[in-house]
Amino acid sequence: MAAASATPEQKQQLLSAAEHPGTDAVPHSVDFHRALGLATNNRFMGTILTAVYEVLEWQTKTQKLSTKERWETDAAHRAIAESIEQDNAERAAHQMSVHLEEFKEVLRKQGRLTEAIIPKPTADTSPQGSAWY
Image 1 (cartoon, rainbow, N blue to C red):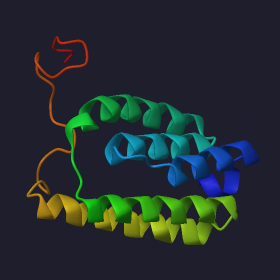
Image 2: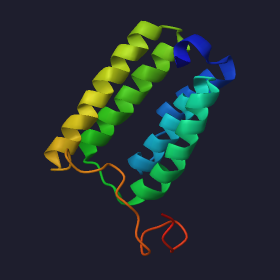
Image 3: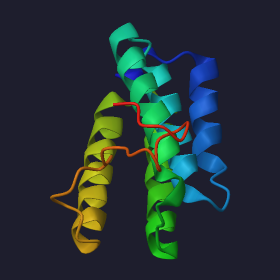
Image 4: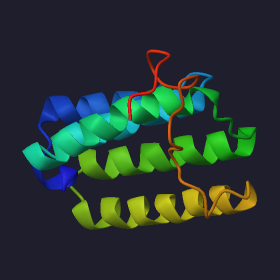
């Protein structure tokens, strides 16, 4: 969807998010996925992904990836961003599918495949320190 509708500025933002991962891969990964959602220029997707982004940004601060997993994630993000920048929707979709399968494998290795990716918050873990459910 993003390959067909992203503006040149959005493509540049997506490439930038993919090319500057820093050392804290998970919050960076959240930034990449947020930029990807915005690049779809679809109001429904934007609303859904903004809500998911807010929860993921808060939840993933403590999640750790191995150096290899971080490298693979960064490489996948770069490949997806480059395909979108080149308007190659088919390749971008394929690379995103592979990326999601790799993420599924990471969850399996961590024994988290059957767990919720975003656990139900508690008073101790919610964004403002109080339960919001």
